[in-house]
Figure 1 (tube, rainbow, N blue to C red):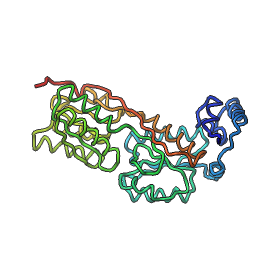
Figure 2: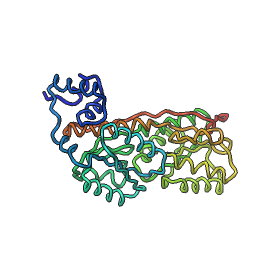
Figure 3: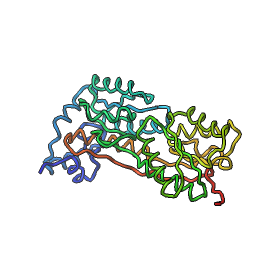
Figure 4: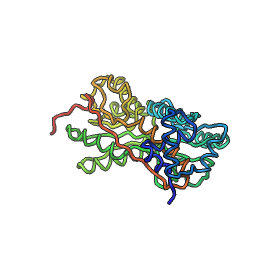
Length: 330
């Protein structure tokens, strides 16, 4: 039976990422490095040669390809990934795709040309289904966005479950006509819409959802149309922080308030969400944990290229604020 990096980590009572960092010559204390080396000797572990070759490249670099760096979610992901890469002695090339499959293809080609050690990638719906058909000269971990058969390790939120939490929250506070706005560029929007629709039907409510571009402007225009045409829904769920901001801007432009004219809930506990009006009810994603976990999966994949694929599904939590204060039930 072969010895893996996990066996070494268990023997040294540290994480696999710490073992990888120590073996790669990353920044660890002398005492910790000695502890890992002792565990290597005790277990008879032999570091994977392909991983060692990758680490010997001059670049000592990983690629981080995100969908929209102006979205605070991806800013936070980038920070967490960079922190972990630094600890492992690796540099980061950050690429922003603007949800554009052509830019994704360009940056993936760049990663191959740069012979990076590995890539962490948040792909569009158009690209994620094609990844399994391609062979890359580096391991890849998908973050935030994945689908069955993509052929890559992945770290994602339980998107359907999180959307269902928001529906249940609004329903328990007496709201019945609950609209959903979902980003049309990613698998994340699809999964959140499915969770929303399933929860609405489970509670005997009629789903009413729209796929729109994941931008502030798109949400502003959609909500403005509700108030012009009427009647507006009682509540809305926005599937990311940019759409959520667009909803709030549209309410202000129309002279409307939360929750009297529209109850508002969404995703991403960004710094501004508890400062707007009565505060926004949101799903808080474990963003830093997602970034750290993606980096750990990448390091472990370097050590064990043939290990089974892993998909880590993390839970979010609903932070209740004044934008969804309950109404009397009919």
